[in-house]
Structure formats: structure tokens, C-alpha cells
Length: 196
Image (cartoon, rainbow, N blue to C red):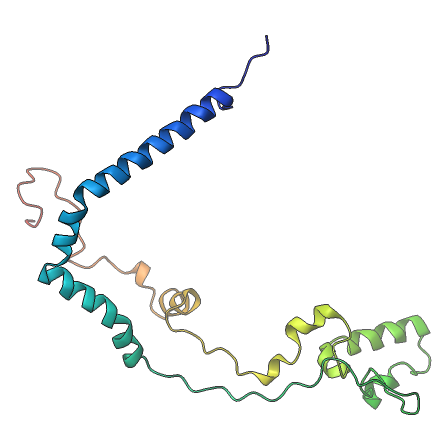
């Protein structure tokens, strides 16, 4: 006979659990029906009514006290795809290349594979939004024209700021002696921890 693992629940076990859940729900409903009037009477007490009104007005107070942040005016984004051409207009996907960067390709006395490598290295230093008019690949859309939005102000309470303020200080506080109030427990004859 095959041995069943202890954590596997067969049909009888599942039936038992579903019956227990049904029984527990029935007991809860019975308790609620039995104590329903007492619960309603308690809710009519003034302290509960007062607390309920406070809970209702609390979000309104919070919203009234909230400081409205200025709305950031953003430049309108261009259409994501170039307009359809009828064949008469030549629409280039790429923006014109800077003449200095293009001149790298035509340097004399240097092998072409080196000039092409130098050209591509220089060209790829610019983000795609400065090289193309429209996001040609879907993975460019994430960072497309991020310069249009203001940078997020640095928080004074985030981890990096705290590290800069505490760890990188001119004085080496960790080399100084501990302050007088910072003493360990008195080990012998300890009647009062504050005595010396």
C-alpha cells in the first residue's frame, strides 16, 4: 500500500475541514443574532456616536490641512510615431549628425575599423532622444525625454543624506571618549543603576 505524505489531505480530511468551517460560521451567525440587540444598543451610546463622527470628519480635516503642491507644467510630448509619408516627403528617422562626429569616420591614416569604432563610441554617448526624432524601439519609451521633467529634490532624511551627515564628518567622533552620561551598568553592588 502506498504511503501518503502527512501534509497531503485526502477527501475525508477535506470534508472534515469544510464541515468545521461551516460549523464555525453557523456558530458565529448564531452568536451575532443572539447579541445583535445588545450591539446596536451599545452603538447608540454617545461616546460611540462621537467617535464615529470623528472618523467621518478626519479625512476632510486632513484634506483641508494638506498643502497643495504646485502643478508641474510639462512640455507637450511629440507624437510617438512619425506622420505617414505619401512618398513625396523624405522623412528621416535620425536627426542630423554633428559634423565633428561625422569627421571621425573620415580620418586619414587610421584603419576603417578603428574609425568606425571611435565614431560609434562617440555617437552612443548621446541618448537615443538626441539621435532620433521618435522612439523607434519600444524599450526607448521608458526614458524618452526625461529632461522635460524637473529632477526629484533630494530628501534630507533619506539614507544617503544621513550617511553623509553622520559618517563623513570633519571631526572623528568615534575616536573621542564616550560622554559622561553614556556609562555602562554598574556591575558590583548594583542597588541603583544611576549611582556611580
